[in-house]
Length: 465
Image (cartoon, rainbow, N blue to C red):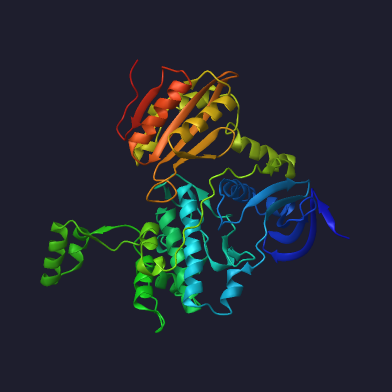
């Protein structure tokens, strides 16, 4: 007898992992097929992966792209957690790769992967476990990125420190346990996937994990004889062990040869850098990538509201208490004294490494109306609105060279009283013009003249009173 969970009738099992099972299900109201990821409560508690589950759900909730698996609903019971997700009937990309791919097919999958990863990065999401096993295919053969359990949400340019991912696909800087940029690490993984799509095997293989990591850090791989010159050049740019630009000045001490040093001196005088892993923008602009390339249609409309039960109810009282303590204050309606102190510019450490423009604007409206005015102001200056939760909104420019917004603006609404809020707006990238225009219009709309505009810098001290 088929089991009913919510409005979904569960069917056969279509996948199984270490901590979850995936079953095919049907929405009894619409007859739409969905995939249901079933997570056992005791397994979650025993393996201490509550945070990982919540992170996967919160990350997927932010993403709405044709080549990313969508999450529709989360149902929590006393013993299980059910993630209702988009069903990719084509199975894993690995199954398709076993049959062999033509260059055209490999390029199409890689183009769709890069589109999806570019979209994630534009939203501050870094996957950190990109591999064919986490790439699914829908009924039309289109690629879908899945499994965001190891993903992280950071501001553009922020450094990460957690070493994670699958050994054969992990970037050199992650292996060496250095602080790394999530975007560059994801690009490396995409390069490994591209090599595998074209060659039918991994670029780095070894029975010894130590030897495998040595090959990865040195980028020791051999392209098959049938690789074209353009394919070799693109893969060489992506599978570059150095994720950053190395100034030629840094290389002078390495070379004793007089002729080589003379050449480096010439490059230094020209202010030329060497040894940089390709960025997504450079990959997209590459001649091989551009063949038959069609940009995935961006979904501008807001994703349909997703129902998420209180996950803390699925854990026992002890675990529930820990989760509540850890998240306390993050979604509180009213601000307390400690939160108010932490908002002081003098205590803001975000400017220690990156210059960030911030503004605080008062609002005499309730929180819902304040959010609505933020959204209307954003649309007036041609910004796409992406609501993160009830208190935070991310804004992106509609038309830009990066395709998903060179301007990244974040607006947080903090309720000070039932009819009074404070809007904290920060710009992590883009030119000041649109940011200042947005702040000016919003300030006028909220009818507040006491806005505080500041640019946080490393050595900036709080204003004395």
